[in-house]
Length: 171
Image (cartoon, rainbow, N blue to C red; front, side):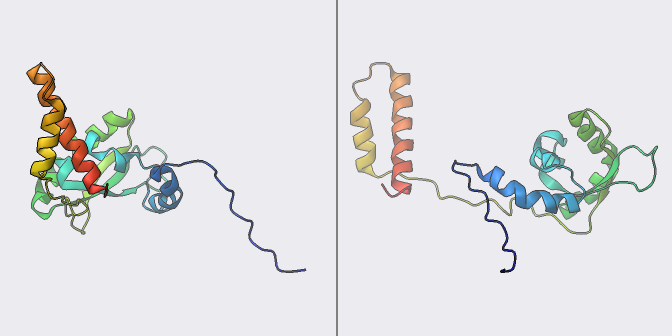
């Protein structure tokens, strides 16, 4: 007999979102960092108070060991270097906002990571679309028959947006 071959992966004959596909790869990594789920990372911009939602990001969640009466974990945040002092003073406010979001005491304390955070490092800048004169004239001719000026302007903006989308997709 041959060596036991690994089972063939189960086929999924359906479309899946990128989040569902990546969940299998991300969840074990997040569990090593102390996160039971992706909620605190994916919803950080909603739960964190301003301006900390833009200048800090959760790095790790450290749970207390052996203490049954201890409530909450220690949230380690990576932050922009200029905001470290403010975050260290506002740690209770940040913890309260997170606990309010979840509805129970999840975070007992907030600490800072030694690693800095660079906001917007993953954002990709797109050049603004400038339609050609022929596209502007074509869209203008299509909507010229509309009597209501507000509707005509809305249709013109929509037509230019659709034209930019089709040009960017190579069509």
